[in-house]
Image (cartoon, rainbow, N blue to C red):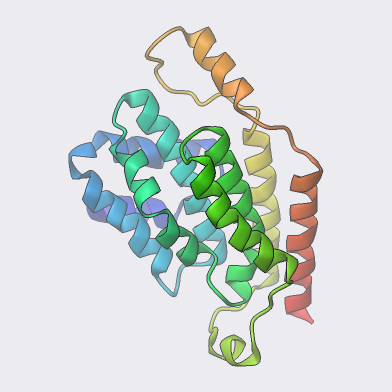
Length: 217
């Protein structure tokens, strides 16, 4: 199960099908939940994991929390809450690729707060640090850039743009799971909890493109 789950994480995409397939695997093997969750941390902290895969895994944690809540196995939610700092540090470390993930990490935190998977205090704690980092326009030092083996390629940029589009598309899609209660009520709850694509989201995409473009110069 561990090797299968690691393979799913490595191939994880922004699409609903990919995210749900991986989350449902985790729920089917919930008796090994701690071991499977350690796979998530392991993959995030691997030096060879691309910045795009890290963001896909980050948003997968939101899907995992949704699936866990609806399935009545909230241990995964508690693990996300417990290891959130470690997750954020792995997704948005210092360096070019980490900096490119700051804006989307802030979006993830906002969505987790809106869905009440994290409380206001935890959200503010992480948001303030990331906001300060983004507003400071932090770029990697020449020393850290020199040690960063994996650069951001044009292919990486195009993939990020496409997967960001997919994430925004999913904001208005129903999470197709076997409902525990009234399907219409489940749909209404999901609809109400979903935010619109707004100016902040578009600004985030512009910032990411500018950052990626600067890495090519």
